[in-house]
Amino acid sequence: MTESDVVVDKSIEIDGAGRDVTTVRAASGPYMASARVFHILSGNSVIIRDMTIQFGVGGTNGGCLLNEGDLTLENVTVEGCITSGSGGGLYNTGSLQLHATRVAQSQADQGGGIYNAGMLSIEGCELFLNTTLGSSAENAGGGLYNQGSAELIDCTIEGHSILSPVGSAIFSVGSLGLRQSAVHDSSGVAVFISGGAAAIEMVSITVSTGNALAALGEAQVDIRGVLMTDNARGISQCSSEPMSLVNSTIAGNVSTGSGAGIFVCESRTLRIASSTIAGNIADSDSDGDGNGGGIFLEPPTDCNPICINTTVELRNSIIADNLDDSPSGFRHAHDCDGTLQSDGYNLVEQGSLSELTGNCFVDGDTSGAMVGSDPLLDSLADNHGPTPTHALQPGSPAIDAGDPDGCGDFEGNPLDHDQRGAPRIGTCDLGAFEFGSGPPIFSDRFQQ
Image 1 (tube, rainbow, N blue to C red):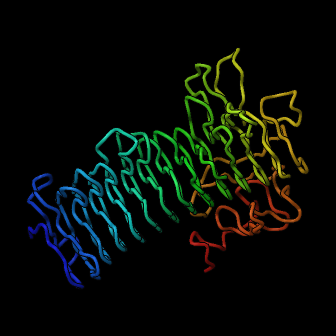
Image 2: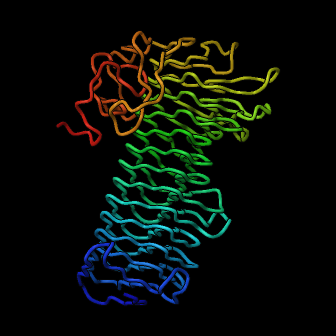
Image 3: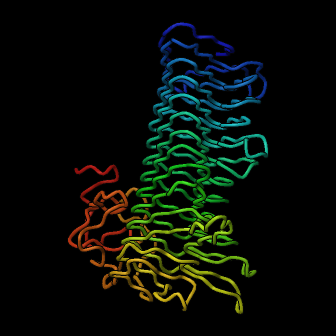
């Protein structure tokens, strides 16, 4: 069925016979329409179910759907949509709920798939191969551009590309929750948090040509139970607000520059608890320009009136097996480049407790600190959790080496489970994996 510029000015339910059976399109093919498909006016509650919506062309915002009301999409595909403004697939200023919905192959200047300036709730979705069209920093959010409040649960966000370097999968300046989801195959920075608060939990971010995640401005970012691997960098922490990394694994990221695992911008703060930073490679092109395979702390340059230190606080964590691949004759800083502020009970394989030796200095509370020890990490693998982890091998010095008073985050909350959701037993182990703990807690963190 071909319909375009359908203005919905009353509360209604629109049911199809299935997304493979019922298709509502603005034209017979992509880029051929002169209008979007649906426009939901303010004050109306609308449910659209079991159909595919295609080939809309929004003159300003919302290539296929523009929502100003209360819109729910259930078992819907939105695809092949385009606008010269924002929200290639959907533009939302009202309340938008997506359930088992796919938004694919759509384009816009901002928010190739979805642009959200209202309330957005997504559960069980796929954002696939959406793009933005311009090359400036404003042309962000290939999958989602969020300046409102957005909560995404159980989503696959894959294959997004942009010409600008920021936010290829998600760009957020609002409130963002991203949980139990996977972000794959993105160009540029996969998830870019430029403001607001973001909670990232039980998420894997892999194969980004830029950072897996970057924070800027006054963004408040809390990361828990997350895997970042096979990216050009794991994290860039450049927000003026402290970032938390808890029960997470940053592993196997490869950068031609510094901080393949984590780059902390000058005078910024990152707090790491019960996490594993391993197998990351800096200066991968071996041109001598790059240090800190695991963590790079950018030295402060603005000291007027005083210097504000670049700070990484570390507790109950492992930093090991990282590499600075600079050639012979150049300075090498493998596990970290800078000074880590220990809160006790950490293993830094290529660190030093003396500022006079090495390039990775462990300062602060060094109770239970181990430097120069191999944690005996297994390869990254599926160990019965929502994301792969590095298991500890038998005999690892990280086993039962955590805080004897219990592992906790920086807000004083106990960490009773590891990254997989498996219980911490006895004296907690260092890092994101608890040795000897079975998987009675499943990937949704509920018992059978």
